[in-house]
Length: 510
Image (tube, rainbow, N blue to C red; front, side, top):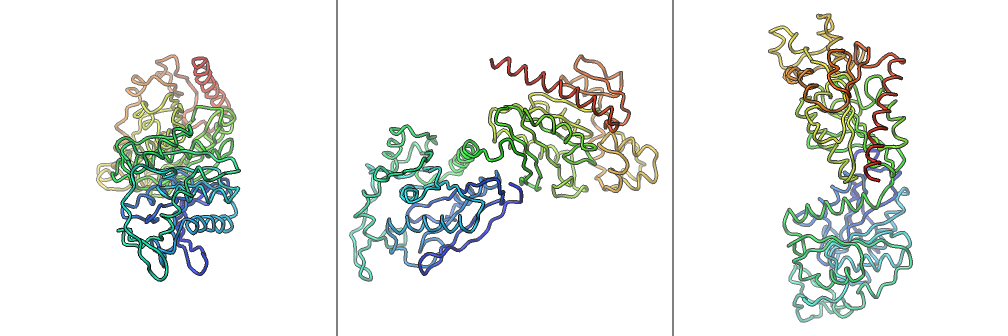
C-alpha cells in the first residue's frame, strides 16, 4: 500500500483476440497477492450494478490488488460469446493469470473469487497451476443443483450447436452436454488451497452447492435473505465487508514490518504509517496537532513509536494539509479532523476487529482526543491547554475568513506561545493560513473543564492541573518537550504507562 490506489486498464492476448481487464492496485511491493474476480456465465467486470467494481475498489483501498476482467465475447471484449465452452473459460482464466503475473513481477500468489459458474472455472484453472493459494465462492455453483433454469432447444449456428440464453447471447451447447464433468468434486488440486464461501440463504440456484460447502466443512458465511446476484445494496455491502475481512485474515504481509500508504476518505487522501505486530492486540494511535505531521512535535511520536513497535501495533497518520496527506490548510475544520480520525479508527478496527486502541495526542488534537474519548480504550494527552488565538485577534481580523500566521508573528508577541499550544514552535508554525472559524472552534475548548471530565492519562505543565492521580506534571513551558533531557523523561513515563495498561489487559485475559 505504498502508493495511491491505481486503476490500470490492461489488455491480455488470447489467441488472436484481446481480453480487457482492470487492475486495482497500490503497487505495494511487499504484498505479493492478487485477487482475481471470476464472473459466471453472462457476467462481466462492470455489470449494470457495478458490483464487481465496488468489490474491487473496496478491497484495493484496503491494500489488496484486484483484477476484474471480461471473458471472450463478453463485456467490452469483441468476439462470439457462443464460442466459449468450459475448457475455453478455464483456458482464458489460466492465460490471464499467467500474463498478469508475468507483467507484474511482485505478484506471485493468486486468489480466485468465483461467482456462480465462475467457481467451476476457478477450481479447474487452479488445478493447472501451483500459485493459487485460495478460492472464494460467492454463491458459486459446484455441484448439481435441484433448481435449474429452463434451457431452450438447441439450434445450429455457423456449424455449431447453440441454444438461446434469453440473455442476448447464444450459448455453446457443449456447456449443457458436459455440465456434470466440471463439478468441483471432479477437480483435483495438488497444492494447498484455502477455501471460503459466502452464500445467500434465499438463493435456490446455489442451495445444493451451499450444502456441499458445509459438508466439506469449508469456512463460510451466510447473508440472510439475499438472492443469487445480491440484488440489494445492503447485500452487496455485506458481501464487501465479508470479503475485506477475509483478506485481512489471510494476508498478513505487513506484519512486523512498517509500511506507509494512502487511504481515501470522503474528501482527502490521507497518509498512514503502520507497524503491525501479530503478537499484539493493541494499536497505539498518535494524533498530531496543528503545525505538526504524523511524526509529532520535533519527531516525538516517531521516537516513541521506535520503542513501542517492538511489542505493539503502531499507527501514525497525517491530517489533511499536513505531512504527506493532501488538502489545504485553509480548508481545515475541526469537523474535518474529527471525520478523518473516525475514518482511521474504523479502518484499524476493520483490520483487527478485536483490537484495543490507545490514543496519544498533542497540541490541537488534545481537544479531538478528549471530545472522542469513547472510541479509545485508553488515552494519553500531552499538555492540553486553552487556545486563545482567536480570542486575541482584533475585531477586524475576526471578520476575515482566513488569517496567515506570518502576519500574526509580525504583529503580536503572543503568537509563538499560542502556536505552541496548538502544536509547534515558530519555525514550524509560521506562514500557514487558517480559517478564523476553525480558530474560533478550537477556542471553545476549556482545558480546566476538559480535565475535570477526563479520566485518562495526561501530562500537564501547570501544577494547578494536577487534580487526579493519573495526571503527571512536567516542567515544560512550551508543552512540546523540545529539551532532549525533558523528552527522555517524558518518553520513559509514557512507556511505563503503556506497559502498565497492556500488562493489565494480559492479566485480565489470563
